[in-house]
Length: 179
Image 1 (cartoon, rainbow, N blue to C red):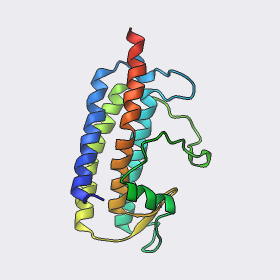
Image 2 (image 1 turned 90 degrees about the horizontal axis):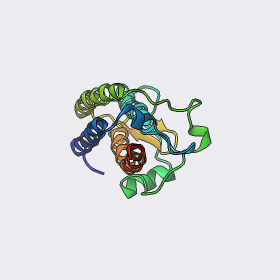
Image 3 (image 1 turned 180 degrees about the vertical axis):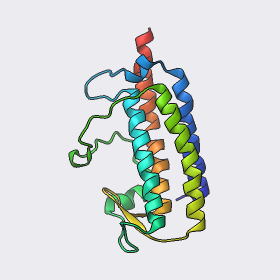
Image 4 (image 1 turned 45 degrees about the horizontal axis):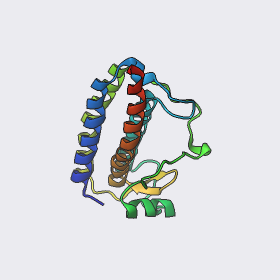
């Protein structure tokens, strides 16, 4: 696993990539769904905002030593993902029990520009807090098991990286509506 500074740098690069791509889209592109099973670009962006915020809040929870433990380990899936260095390069269907009760609703481009700028400001604050607090306190990830603050930030980076391929696929479909 990379060190915290490298993880944060890569996370910032991914966040900036997603942010910069927004200037390529119209509101029609963001809301376009090629079929019922496939997300729109807006739904992907919504997922990334919600999950990225969640990962950073979990890291902060570790720093507060709140709702977790100094004990506990990663699950087998967690150990495999960390050993692999991220999610495998395959499409992953979220198990039904972990899906949110409501469908992700695409917001405006301006909403995502603000949200990604907010994440770019939030990430270094969390990084700095981790650097000044060397706690080994962990919080539970539903699939990967008990994770430290640094590991939660690593989940942010690997999750953003994992969705880059999906972004490209959704973008290609959405931009076809102009042709």
